[in-house]
Structures are given as C-alpha cells and as structure tokens.
Length: 511
Ligand code: SAH
Image (cartoon, rainbow, N blue to C red; front, side, top):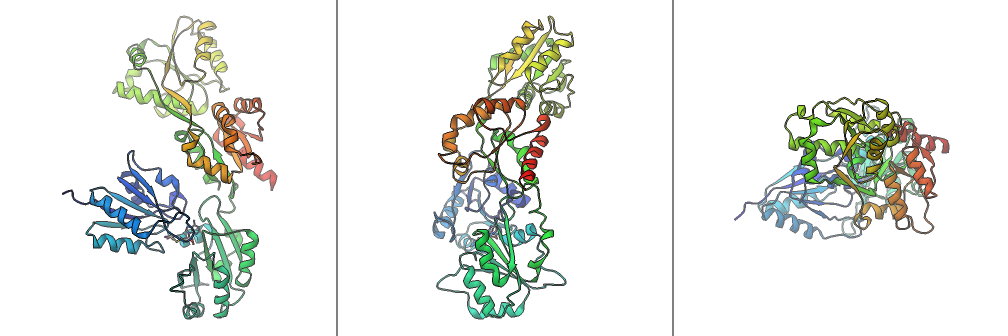
C-alpha cells in the first residue's frame, strides 16, 4: 500500500500574488495536485511544476459554479490516499471564513497527514492597501472580524451586534455586500453613531482596488453611487476615518488602469512587474508564443567551428537566452565561446548578453537590422570575415543578406527559437479581455501587432471599444499604422521605462 501524501492547507493571500508566503509558494511549485478556489490569483496557480494536476473549485455565495464542500474534501482525500502531495490553496487565510477548519477535521478523521500554511487575510490586506491602520493607540484597541453573509439558519443575532456596537473598536466585515443595507441599519439600531467612519474596499491589493469612504449612515448610498460590490471588506470604526492622503496605493500613477501585455508569457515578467509597481492591473494576453527551435545538425556544425567566427550577432533577447542555453549544454566552460566580437540589436538584447559576463562590442543606436548592418560594415572588419547571426524564424534573412552583399562577409545563420501565434481558444485571458476589456493595450513588437490584427474580431466584438494603444517604438508603430490601427502613445527610446512613461503621460493628460 502506498503511504498517503500530505495535504497542505495553504493561504494564497488576498489577490496580489506577492502576498503569498515563501513557504506557500514553494509548496505550490512542488506539489502533485493543486486544488484552488475562484478568488485565488491565476498567477499563483501558473507556478506549478509541469504535470501537476490543477483543479479549480470553490464554494461561496459569490461563486457561480459552486461545488459541494464534500466533493472538494473527497477529492483532496482521494489524491492524498494515492500517495500524491496535495496543496489546497485558499484565498486569504484558510482558517478565516474559508472552511479550512472543516477540511482539516476531515483529513484528521481520514488519517491523512496535513499541515497548515497561514495567509494574509483580506481584512488585513484591504486595510493595509487603503492606508487604514486597524488598531491605533488613539482610536481603537479592539478588532473584530465578522461575516455579513446571512446563513438563514443561523443569522447573526441582534444581541451580538449590540455587544459589538457597545464594545467599540474596529469592525471588519467579510461577505457583507449583499446584506450591507440591513447590516448598517442593524448596527445603527444597536447604537452605533451614524457618523462613525466607514470604508468599503473592493478587490483589495489588485490594480482594480476601489475604496469608498463615508459616515456609517451614508455608506449604502455611497457604495451604490460608486458601483462597488463583492468581493469587498467593510471596515467600520474611527480608524476608517484616517485621511485620504494616506491612501498610498490609490495614489499610484496607474491606479485603477487595466493594461494588457501582448508579448509572449516568458517575456512578459519584467513589464508586468513594472506596470504593477505603478499601480496598474495587468492582463497577460500573450498573442505570440516563443519556443526553442533549432536544427541539431546546424547546431553541431556551428559549435564545431565556433573559433572560426570573427563576429557573433544577436538580434533579440530571446536569441541570446536560447543560444546560451544550448551553448552551456554543449560546453562546460565559457572559454569555448572564444574570441568572437559581439554585436547586438537593442539595449535589452545587449543586457541579456552582459548577464553572461560578456561585453557587447557593437550596439547601434537604432534598434533595427539595417543600422546594425551599417555599423558592422563601418568597422571595416567584414570583408571575408565569418559572421554568425543568431535568429528566430522571423526576418531571418534580411540581415544576413545585407552583410553578405554589402559587407562581403561570410554569414552563417543559426536559428535557435521560433515565434508562433497563441491558440486564443485555449487562453482564459482572451475570454477575460473580450468580456471585460482593458484601458491600455501594449505592443512591444511588430509580430504582436500582426497577430492582434488577425484576431481582432475575436478579441473586440462588434461595438466593443478599442483600448488605448501604446507601442514600443517607431517600427511597431509603423506596423500598427499599416493596419489602420491607432498609435495613441509611443515609448521614448524603445525601452520598458519609456513605455511606462508614455502610458503615465496619457493618464495624466486625461486627469
Ligand atoms: N479566507 C478568506 C476569506 C474568504 S470569504 C480570507 O482570509 O481573506 C470571501 C470574502 O473575503 C469576500 O466576500 C470578501 O469579503 C473578502 N475578500 C476576499 N478577497 C478580497 C479582496 N481581494 N478584496 C476585498 N475583499 C476580499
């Protein structure tokens, strides 16, 4: 008999993927089965190892496809009994209104080993990201977490509300949006001052976080006019009256803006992180996929003759990364790279080369093949020189041909990757884009524009709004214009920082 795997009841935190614990993330990355709830950030569930079984489940008044609690527990138990390591990932903390207690009891009863990894619960996160200190030496020294979800068989009794009103301090209400009106009137009836400060924080910690503040008696109308609903935390008490100026998250330049990234997922990370750091909510919509692709005979030949090349040319960051991946599979020692001089197109390509502790000898100011070819020819070193060009599957011949014809060089091309269109049918983010839209869409290369144009009708249905477009530079902008697509903003100096600045400028101009 196989010995049972362990079930880890892990808190995923409130939304911002950075708010999971280090321990929780390590378990997600190593588990065999991941069972998670609807409110858990997809970025976390995407961190599983290849082959991990990923099951989306969940219960709750706000979830449509509710699965019974018993089904969830049974699945956990079955998988663990077959010897698999199971992570049961729950929004916030597993033991705060998350039914983690029941799941633990079931595991215990079935004799399955389990561990609990706490998480940042929504109330702590909402308060932190709205600049509301839940306790304060001057205002509150008692803190209560309660649920506003009215279980018809076990309604929160008026007596309890009266006690809470009398006790004062801070109230944090989970699942209270549907019953907000009755909650507020019951609290007022229980004796709470109508001017008691209150705040509602929806989608806390995410780019779409919205905060509504008002006195208790006006809370319902304020929430209605702001159009705020679930999921939200309601905070009632003097601390909720902290000045708006302390709302550090809402003050970020792209707060409330939803931005789509269309580049391949393996390249999206840095841009995503930068956009989020200035408050944007990012939707990854990878219209293209980049994957290693090479001909092994050519690789063997090129590597055998590596010392004969005078120049190696890298045309993209992907080229650098895939080249060194195969290089270090073939050679143990960087000295096998030899004395080739290195040329690169684009600052980000150069940066990837430098990460290998190799200096770039030639980096033309303009990030296009023509400029690189010219700059190489100008060095006067080309006639009869052997040049190795590292490429993907696109535009692979232009550079080689110019170097051969104008520069009289002997050029070998080594393809190490290919760019292919993503299957949008299989992409949950494409559905999200279609249904909810975005404020901005970023294009970092012409290939993302080609694929966007081809699939535009699927992504933006008739009558849908074209988001504000932001392009990485003149070439991408030219491609956009060639399809009659707008170029609303263009990055200065073709860098991610430039892209960010361009988006921020548009937002500022609208304010
Ligand atoms: N175990 C979770 C709570 C689950 S109950 C935790 O510890 O946070 C679901 C409720 O949590 C929602 O109705 C809402 O009140 C709150 N919630 C969860 N995520 C939230 C978020 N990002 N912003 C605001 N409230 C959130």
